[in-house]
Amino acid sequence: MERTAIHRRLTWQYASVVDVVAETARTKTIVLHPGDWDGHLAGQHVDVRLTAEDGYQAQRSYSIASAPEDEHLVLTVEKLNDGEVSPYLTDELRAGDQLELRGPIGGYFVWKESLGGPLLLVGGGSGVVPLRAMLRHRRASGSGVPARLLYSARTRDDLIYRQELGGFDAAITLTREQPEGWTGHSGRVGRKLLADVAWPPAERPLVYVCGPTGFVEAVADALLALGHDPARIRTERFGPT
Image (tube, rainbow, N blue to C red; front, side, top):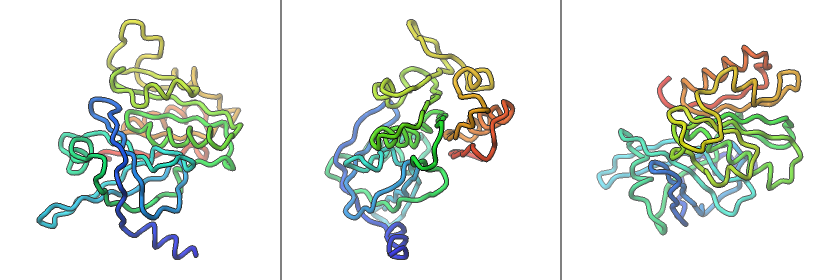
């Protein structure tokens, strides 16, 4: 059975696009119905493959935004101007289309209730996507594990899941503007903000950090400087290394 499950995860299949929803000017949420899906863990990702008419193929990995309990498999994709896959997904894909994918993939950057907490989630930009899956999973499973999100975005208009975040214990910081009436935090995530928002090291929070490489490295360094246990910090990064 295990070999069958692994084979299925590594086999490409088509998923039907149920809906495409704009999150920000550059980000779309894609709601999918895979034909054959055994479920996933919060924090896992899938590979998406596009094939051109001449046979050229390009593939990228995207974090799953939905909880295991959600009805559909959901991806949230940010458009990269020089990207090969994301411009098609955000600009061309429509409900009723078929999208080729395989997964779920990954077993390290995942959270389930048995791992405990307190749970501290730190996301930068589209790094909030797998963290949203964890928060939705925690809520859907009725978990009593305390959870808190610290989310960094460039501007208020860049905030992904802006409305949904209000339903979580979420602290938001903006790095490139402080709009009128803004009551959240300002500036990059560093030692001071983490000290203000995170549980202290003595409470041994389980920390997940996701975002661009520079963001993840800076946050991880700040957590270590504050005295957090490195064995309880899990990171996932994207972009140039």
